[in-house]
Image (tube, rainbow, N blue to C red; front, top):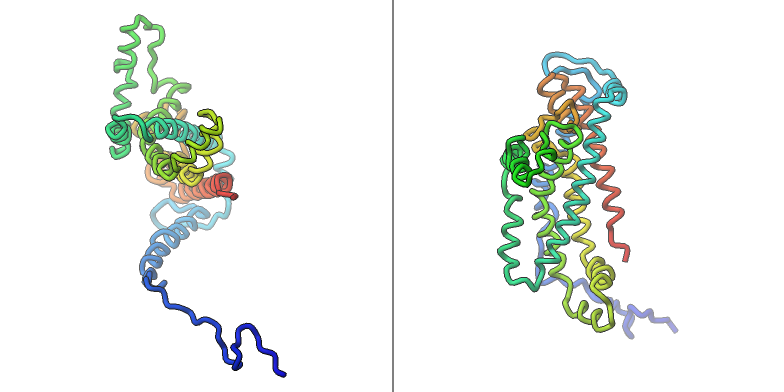
Length: 306
């Protein structure tokens, strides 16, 4: 007697269910082909072309020679550029930590109960839509020796605390960091507010009924629930911090004495001010590699392992 498999009926026919066509169709993959080609051509092919000049001595005009890793050797041997790398990392990680701490605190404070939370959200987010150059020039006036900060200190009778904030090497880098954090914290707050909106209040209420305190509910319920927001905010702030340019150029121009130079400002100066296109391309390639490495590490650190 012939055996009948589970996919076959009593008569030996194939009764496996047919593939049901979905009611809603989301299109075909080739619809995105033009956009994918544009991204590849504009971003990746152009970037690869620029990366080639990192291994040349091109000045921007005329012929050039292929010099291998000579530009990268100059970067490593130049203490000024290593100082720019340190400044870039200081600003990037300071920016990453401070914006996320302040943004999360503001999001928690303005999440549900406060009646004026919508107005406060708008006021805190407003600096984000302003031009970084415009904001930096306003802060340059605030940090000026005759500006509001020193006038306020004089009004308090603390003339000995008055400083040329942007002219002292030890303070100028902190001033740049303050401006960056002040303008961008509102964006991080909005990202965390979106994450907090997905946390059901019933879960927090259940935690409170079980005796969990404020810190316990935040650590064991709220923070794990907004892991995706943490990853997004962390990646955006890290990338933005590593390629900081506008605030430095507007506030200090890289000074005093190169104390606030970053890799991005060095790329601009070497490429367009000194016409060292090959050397500037090498700096830009190094900055791109740093951004890729730290972004990958940050994504790995904040990914959901559940």
